[in-house]
Length: 263
Length: 245
Image 1 (cartoon, rainbow over the protein chains, first blue to last red):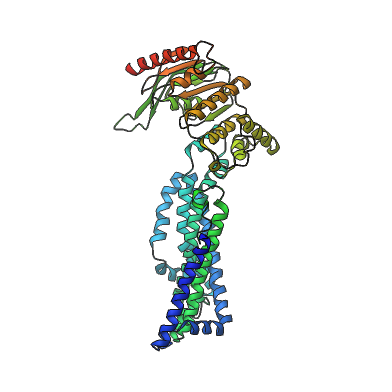
Image 2 (tube, chains in turn yellow, red; image 1 turned 45 degrees about the vertical axis):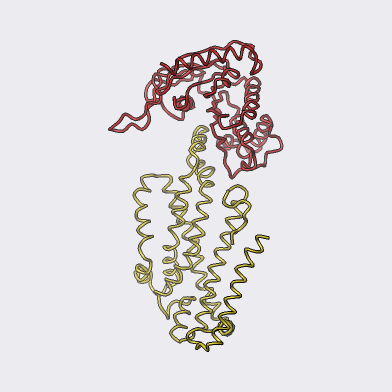
């Protein structure tokens, strides 16, 4: 019953908002280049279906590649930090600097260094930088949160560092890591979009570029269609990661027990 | 089996202060097959002493020796200290897995260890599905799985209700008799030590050292038999003296 409400209530709100929107635009005769009606957006979506889905595929590829890269790099760095306190103290400040520097400010540099002929690689690198930190922070905290007594126990039985890492530290870190990954999934998409904006038209072929282009041409309905696709993609990424989290944790972790996927 | 001689331990010494002195000149021996309680007030360094015996800590002064060679050790903490992501069987198997024993062997040994603590049929239950007493049983099964000669317990029943505590105490006595284990049992409960152990080492408040070494008479068959009550009186008397000193 709660599950049904969780889905049906937000859906009901969406329908009400769309209905009111449609009515308001028609009633006050708002010009389509200011605010198109939902029906006009749907029509623009249908008309530009193949070009929009191609653009979506491009943005999605960058997003997923960046997410995977950020996950692998974040976990690897966190493991390195967990094995050497000195390494962590030396390098963690730089990870923070990377996080607090606005990515829009470094994006042009990365584009120049990587080169416009390898635009997708450049976009992926920028999105990876954006998505990297929550994974590193989550995994680092998680690896540190292992029960001291369990660590002592593994020492008592002569466990190697690798065994302690694999059997105790990594499973302890899993809930923290997944929480970081949920944040990073959204950030990878944001990073990909921002990178496309910075790269500008003529080079990028993703949804962000379609938004810029539609704006320039005052094709506001197409702009909205691209925007809706982006939002939908973000939601799907979040739902997928929530399901992954539930699947991995529901047997044992408090956060996932009996609540199901929170999406 | 164990011989501590003048062991001292100090924690977090800083330049300003000397840190906390947990133990000073701690000396005692435990013979193979004995059931010895280490009794003292909270914060007297009992747990530190147990960790010295386990080799998890090194003494700052004095020595910790195993005259017959270092035995296989099982350790039970105050909390069950289980891996929440693993079922009872995997938890009980941990010591064997860490020792890289063969999977077929570890499985049978862990199942047997769980059965011995009364958890037959709960092999695939997760810690969150078990009661406090059952979690502690898994913890004991884990300590037994590697077939230790020396069992170290750090106030294992302190967080349990009295009925569960008594049941687990009886189980512990049975396991000790069946396996010919040597048991070093840290507790702050006079009644627990009077019923379970053959010898009670009474410790002073911090910095802890042994102030009395009481060998208890036989015939303490139940918690209420007269010799158990008599043992309690002796232990309480020594504990009061240790606290006043």
